[in-house]
Length: 308
Image 1 (cartoon, rainbow, N blue to C red):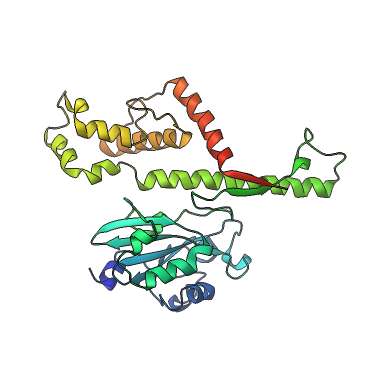
Image 2: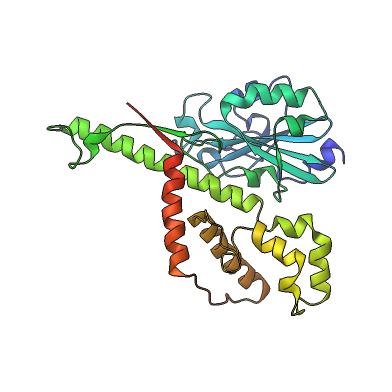
């Protein structure tokens, strides 16, 4: 599939702040991608300050989409310093209709550009991109985040702020210090929620991937009308419920978290409404929910570092 044909599958940016098509993409993004991508951009079509997502296409040995998302600290892109409203957050690749993705940060952009621009056929391996069910670069980009958006292997960095709480305050606290400490706390919570949003995004990108990777086994069950009483004992079903973390009644992983619980909720609601028009009654063992809650606390603790 050629670059233009592939690019045409996605919705073009028509306007932003009611300015012309040529001026839609901020200059600093054009500059950031200079030398590798010129005007092959896609994005959401909201006007002006509400525009949240951009992706630009580079087509060498594969189609690579450089993904940029808007920092939600700013209500409008015009409120943000140049270069900060949109940040590089990931790369999506399409090779022979096989899709791959990886999360990055703005600091990774130079090296990612270099590797992709070299048209090395091993770029996907070098960049450690993973197979994904997402087939639209805009779907890969979170709707927004605070500046704490990080890759999975990076920790959230926060500063000590004991004066935001009377139980930990160090002596008498004036109003200005209380305000500053409270604003720090709000920013910290935003980073924590962005971390969870990232984890949810990861879960969604590989949801039911075993149905795709072993479509032959899944199709065999479909041909039988999913009524074979022995299908739960079969190899495909065992693989499906053990590799897909949200099948908590069939196989609850030891490190189950609330991310898995939320994926299960999304799965059951979306499947029920789309397939039958109603959602089947469902519940989870309280022990599973308590374990997921405690494991989620530990998950976030492991991914936060506190600096003096």
